[in-house]
Image 1 (cartoon, rainbow, N blue to C red):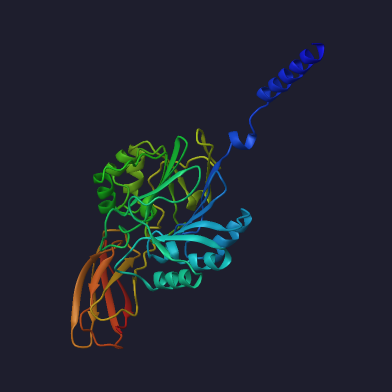
Image 2: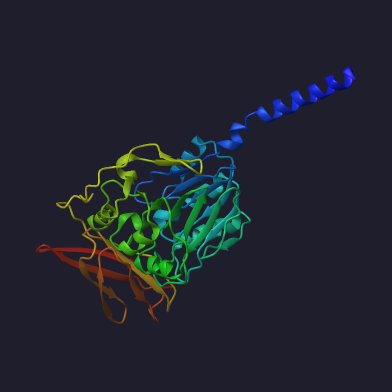
Length: 378
């Protein structure tokens, strides 16, 4: 009997000791880290998910800079790579990341109009033995411990920015929205689609351009914080006073890579912290008003006949009107556009191999500005 009582007491003591043991710190305090990498005038975001998966959204223009940063974070491989849209300041560096790391899955929106940079990236994806998966509304990422779902694009657009893949990531009670360069039209369609957009942290669309981050979108997202990925002293005037004023009116605390470098958000699903404090809500534009220099570029310098390319004019305040004259072999065609907005140029049966010069003329505050670019149909 004594032996039986002894065994019972030992069993009870063991049971109590097991109950009293605290949970593993790892299980209780898994964290997710979101790095808004300072790549100048462009975007690149690295997410370390709570269960260890690595996600990269865009790669700026300079892939070496992104690879160096990832190596400093001891990244071994990448589970998910996302190219939000074909602009070079977002995807120009992703081919370098592909060469440096084993990537398990690649997502990008399906676009009808592309750029040479995008074509090069898709070629690099294929060379790595990957198949591009379509990033569109409703598609979820296979990442453990979090909800990661694309909320945009809702449909196909003629404008490349509106075709941006927009990803919402939620861990516990904290959430993040990554918008690429999505502008008003795409934002409106996301709202109309009745998706749940509420997020604690908003990656501001199109580097703070006035054509993104509408008041209606801010009402739908209701962010407490916003991160603007933007280049110091950029010629676009990003972030614009319009966007900063909208953020200020919505009482959103703002972080900026041009002023603070790389921004890192950390969350355990309940709490949220950053590696620095928000910047002042001053709406002063970053561009020096006394040193304007007009520049122009086309989305594809070697387009096919009957295709559409996009002309982008920079160097003056967004919205400034300009005229662009395309000097084809048989005639001249004039287009009217606005600085900061992509202007579609439809190429019909333009002579193959003939270099079409595009003269751009704009006036601002009594001064005339000129620049030139070109393309050669094939």
